[in-house]
Length: 373
Ligand SMILES: Cc1cc2nc3c(=O)[nH]c(=O)nc-3n(C[C@H](O)[C@H](O)[C@H](O)COP(=O)(O)OP(=O)(O)OC[C@H]3O[C@@H](n4cnc5c(N)ncnc54)[C@H](O)[C@@H]3O)c2cc1C
Image 1 (cartoon, rainbow, N blue to C red):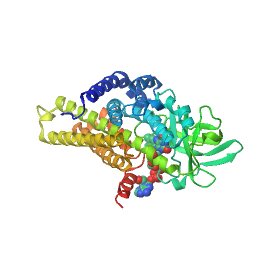
Image 2: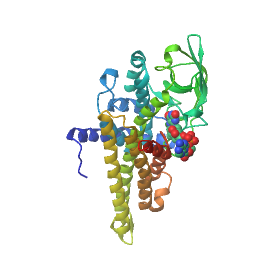
Image 3: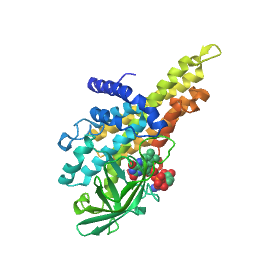
Image 4: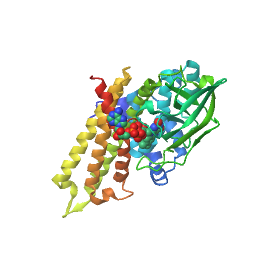
């Protein structure tokens, strides 16, 4: 396909693709099969700029663009989508800190996240809610010199191996405030890794905060009003998920074309059958449409827009289409498409997850419609 990207971005894509294939292919069975987070991937991700590419150098980022970050994400996901979830959490946490924290809090925390030196968790969701902040029950009480945080968070990526993280909690005024949980804080522990359909091996687990005492200056910014921070920071996550979905579609298309060329029926490779043409053509067209939508959403962010509605509408369309495209790739494979261990079977499971993360499709529709009311 003809690319409208600059030569520099295409060269960057080629470099990301090479590194992802070289370093991450062998980790697919580790994450998807053994369900283990591969810490050995971290130095490579850091070298690629995965943890901090689009952030300003003044806060420890690499001063690149959101568009370049989307391409990087896409290329990692072509090989191993679950890895993308891991590094994007650092970016989401950095985004939340930059949204509301003081310069001192930012200087103390953000550079180590954007370099990949530290791994973060982002803890909003709870057993009773993932979409409605009014149902949060994690509480922050004032104690002399600081705060005590108590509660249980659910579905927390990186929970089993994170160094530090941020927690949304209800403050004494009943509003949602945001707190930094520092490395080594007493009273924080992760439950066993949660078993999921896809995106395995990300260290996702429940996170327990049993009366965690933190100093006063670990309240990020001022008290209250952090639902707005959540929405803005999640835009970063949604852009990442959209990028990964495009990467999965691309990989599913490659798998389907390759299988259709080598599988023979009635004396012909199945790629000669018109029904297979139709499936592959739909996959090409949908993947490219999603890629362009992704690049538009990333460019909106690069141009300084908060892009909350643009990214939500991109995430809505792209993540749903990724499931359709993977389903088509499975159809090209016949029954081999649903056999455990077939690449397209894993891609389908991984793609399905993106519809639910960082706000479900239903919640994205609500966000998009709010702009028109
Ligand atoms: C792999 C993975 C990683 C995750 N990582 C994290 C993480 O790091 N940190 C974190 O905090 N969370 C994380 N989550 C949680 C995830 O963001 C939530 O699960 C998700 O937002 C949905 O929440 P829920 O399952 O509680 O659904 P609910 O909020 O209970 O929703 C249930 C259903 O009701 C619908 N619904 C809810 N509200 C509305 C509405 N207003 N209008 C229309 N329909 C609505 C939903 O679309 C859904 O169909 C992760 C989840 C997964 C699967």
